[in-house]
Length: 201
Ligand code: ATP
Ligand code: MG
Image (cartoon, rainbow, N blue to C red; front, side, top):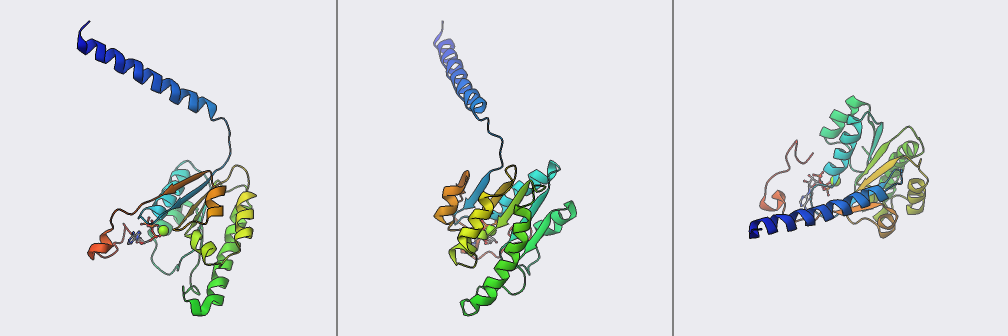
């Protein structure tokens, strides 16, 4: 047998072993339940990933909801598209200022949006719920962390929840099934390029 044949044989054996290991892990994953997915970190791509998950679920005919914990007055490409596909939106619009001088108004705006999200998180007809930028509401104390985590924990068992935002609270990541951190390597904004419609919002 030539060296080349030997190499090919070793490659085949190795790949076969990898395949067997992957197959065994796939076979071992038997639990059917909704997951809590947290996408955090300082890099760009958290909300787009969350909305990508919603698009994926909508593509399968699943029922989805989105809570957005940001100033909701901007034009919002995802909302423009997904509302046409019966995705429910709860957007923290007017009233939210990020102005610490008006913490009361901010808290009220956050809680109003949260009340709408709670309806989705207690309704088993929702397959996937995205809570975009929720992390800040917990970090800044606009929402009660115990209440939020309890509601997520007690959601219908088949329902999946995606939470996005920087600096995710440790209690949230501990509770999550999947946590991904998007790391910033560089961002166009740092070279003075303006945020782009269709890419950044
Ligand atoms: P995207 O919505 O594009 O997925 P994101 O959800 O990861 O971004 P956020 O922290 O929510 O990021 O910020 C939203 C906006 O800020 C977007 O316009 C995004 O391009 C921009 N942004 C995200 N990360 C950075 C960064 N590291 N430096 C500068 N701007 C950023
Ligand atoms: Mg975001």
